[in-house]
Image 1 (cartoon, rainbow, N blue to C red):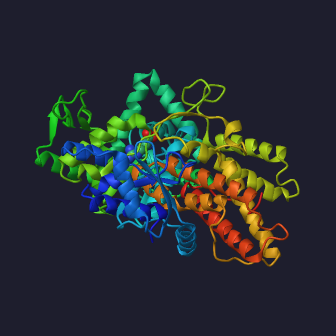
Image 2: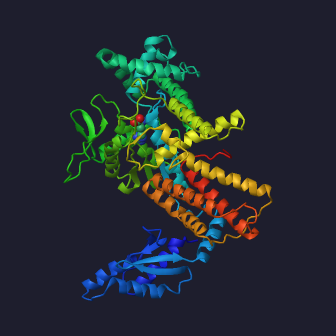
Image 3: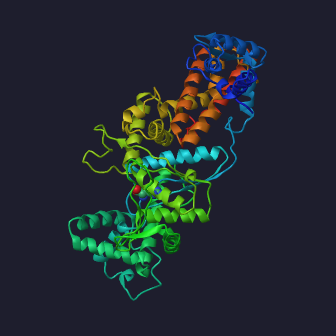
Length: 592
Ligand code: ARG
């Protein structure tokens, strides 16, 4: 099944090739001037340039005229005109559009092109054990979830791994602080090596309190810091009581994280973390030493990863600190070893703050040097920050880090306010209205995040995010819900669906928008860039809006076949809108 664009594109390429030019220069794309024509082919200028190099003197307009001549018999083309120096404007036939709409209705995935399936790990989320989720965890979760869904929609096997931060000094802080508070717990008895209680001695609230207490105490007290460091070292050496505690901390945190991510509509296939790859580290280090890649440096163990002729130095990977401690590089490398063993993915995409770009560059280079991966298999999809009005990463009014829970509450309230201002849902039961406000608030937040290019920073503005006008989540939800209500009304009237007949300009424009879905998904997935899909969904919603106001459907006196055609088109639009929103991780309410 081919999109209208790809049918036209193949036709123009073939003509250029026939005329002795490379097919590539004859490509067709969506027009920069949709007011003149939906598609354009600019190959004539390039072709004239090539002819000139061969010593022939030809005018690009003449080449364009020949191309037009050869294309005139094409059944998918209604009209061709030549503009300016030799642009070819292409109008498809109404029949081609109707046919494409019929195909899209039959397609179970709205025209998303299925790729040769690959196994891909998406490493996102990355929350840390024992710390409550905060605003800094938002973007990785939201962007990562969308990238996972996009790759999956193309037919790939995609595994989302939360890769929790659960190893290193933070664990030493927690263990030692708990020991100070409750020294008599069995975990601290050096002689005890097994049969620890199955019930956790701490709750999530305890952890959230213990961690800052310890880290603040250690900040300006070297002795206290040493206690945390040595607890970390003992944990990493496998002290049984500490390991048992760590497992409690992880279980308690995972339960809390599942709720937190669940509230965001984010799900992981794997709940692995840094700690679980620790057992792989000794063999990994031995392999790296044997291969002559790891070397001693000032008591530490490092891998040099700088490359010749680089402008800025890329510092070495730190495998072991001089204290023998394992570091962030080490656990990420061991995770690569773990993933190589299973599921041995074709690709791994890390959706992590752009400020960690150097870390990933170092780790990737080391993994390639070790011969475990090809460079192309590893990709860091970085992102910018969500800022406050001051242009700095968002903080609460008191200057603290905003908890994710509180962020969602703010969005929820902003959405509820908007709904009541617009009089939406005034006659609904309170529970339904609450649920709608939740969905609208979340859609507002996610769409506002995803519509930006990943790397750009943006400003948190709940008021703007929740507006029902403009390029916002609520606008898109409203568009989808409006179609749902139209279809309910149609069904109440016993109206039927029928063959789509693309006659009116607004119908054609809508079909052309729907035709672009497969492309939008493909390039979003290829570039790990959900904003491309956001743009597409917005275009579909706007095209629908125009169609809905130009083309009567349930209005008395509309001929039955016309109504049936338009209802089918509305239904197709809804399917695509919902599918597109779902790929962004956004849920659509039944009504609003
Ligand atoms: N836990 C890390 C942090 O809070 C993020 C983890 C990102 N993923 C990774 N494989 N390193 O910064």
